[in-house]
Length: 63
Image 1 (spheres, one colour):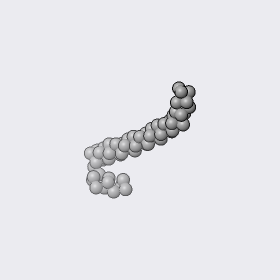
Image 2 (cartoon, rainbow, N blue to C red):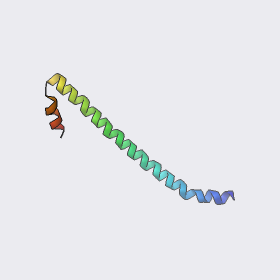
Image 3 (spheres, helix red, strand yellow):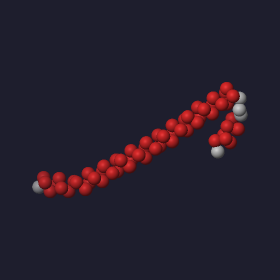
Image 4 (tube, rainbow, N blue to C red):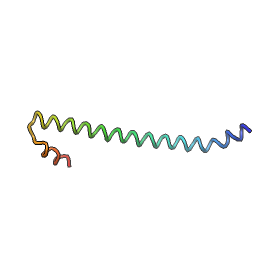
């Protein structure tokens, strides 16, 4: 009985591992994108404050 249950769990385990890997890659890529936006915002604030460019000019350069 236990061996039958263990045998039935093998495909489910493989599927769970694949799903976990995919979810990890998705959340990791979201974190990278968020980090890039944070870095762009920080750099933009430095340009606006220290270099004196207008905020609108910086926003157009981002596009």
